[in-house]
Image 1 (cartoon, helix red, strand yellow):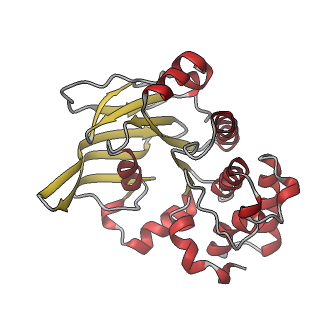
Image 2 (cartoon, rainbow, N blue to C red):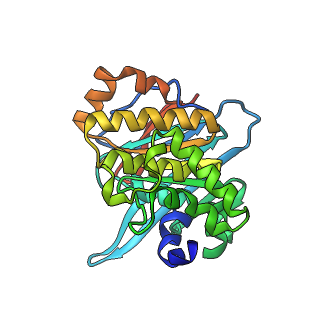
Image 3 (cartoon, rainbow, N blue to C red):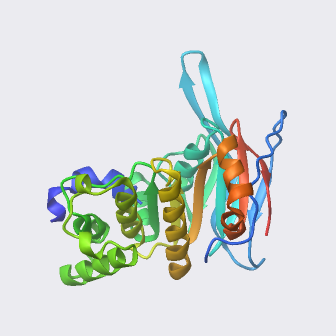
Length: 286
């Protein structure tokens, strides 16, 4: 089965990708961003699973050079959860890509699970992700020619470390956890957006990742479905004990919903950091 899609799937799955508790969503955007060093640590002696020092990302444009991320310091401990919030274009997704080794920094250091990403080539970074990192994307990133079961099996098929029967059994169990036991043979086009994101969640957890990156996972869903997906993601993350990095778009409606209409969601987060114009400007240490 994997032979049908290895080339198309490596970016979506090789790149594809603790409960979330106790914090507040912060919407403090300041007119003069300052450098902010942020650390989430449950215990001081726990080695961070993600550690960033002096991270910068610059790209060339028509007018010269554009700074997307500027001097980011960030440390996230095992089993903790962090929400990265900011307006569209603030650099959130770029930061997530750098943390996961999907992109390379212009300056600074990123250590993921004890590995300095700048010392690894593209194949080594992909191998690190496939063994220890899960992804949930806004656009689901399912393979359209594979069934729900085959999509969930795919990350393990690509690794070729387990018997086919065991891979299928693990994938079926996860689809059952997300409420899709009766949809294993359905193709993505036959599933609603919410059900497609449930398949994506099952796929993200099938490798038992140490770190889960979620990039605006409810951005393509209506509000009710989005909350259901967030609840499901929190519950599955609690069961698996992974470290969670969640990216959200910071807009007025979102802040009002999270703070005034869904305080339970805010209380699930260990901490939230705000990014503005490429700099971390606010956060809470635990």
